[in-house]
Length: 337
Image 1 (cartoon, rainbow, N blue to C red):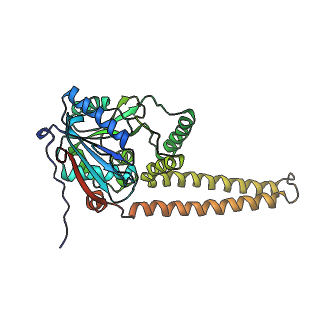
Image 2: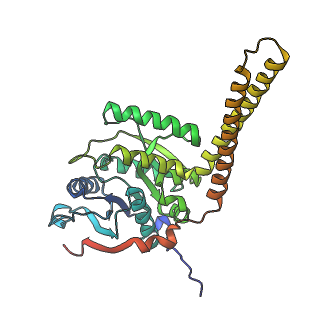
Image 3: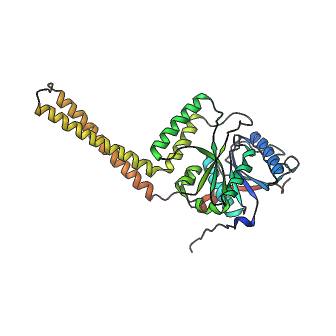
């Protein structure tokens, strides 16, 4: 019998609640401080906020008393989703988003990092922008000021240039965003959500807008993202546009082939049509150009297969596969408090 997967979507005006999805890997102290700030924002702005902490295979568990009602009086609910292993924060976000889409009715979801650099004070502004857009667009926090060191910012600018050159999209946002619940059905069928949340929204042509927000300071401890992890994160974003990157590289390689053929023709013309040729020079130059030509043709064939492969491969389907990665979902409050 064929299995049918269906998400329980509701009309946005039937519910005013907001669910904040936060991936966590061992960073429980920063998450605790962040929950306090979210509670303060909820009380100040009179918002119905719930939180889903996606525990991305943390070695350390939440400390005793984590998520107590007494310290977080303004939050409607806190749940911790324990994953079966460490998948990385992009995949943790993918599973959390799909879980909410299928199991937890609300009007909006907010995706934010758990270290405090995404400020809860900006959440009301993003929500207001989403409502102003008629709940028809994803609202991203556009970074207008960063707090990292000079070396990181320099590397980030290089990455932005390469990303724009290869994909045609400028990098202007991170994970921090508001998604109306009615738009989640566009995301939970996108295999690319497994690789990169923001890039998937852009590639799927989900309507979106930007709201300027400065990046805040980390609340506690040091970032666990080293440069290798950052490079992998950047490549994951590019991987979402693998077919587009492949086409651009293929075009660049075809231009190189045409230039090499032109150079080879020029070498032959100089050798046999003029008296300018130096002995052995023409043969050596022609040989090097021929090697470059065959290499370029080989790369073109490889890029072609990459493009065709990315178009035909069947990968992770969020709405179908997300449940296999969840060990359990625990309600901290108002259940176990």
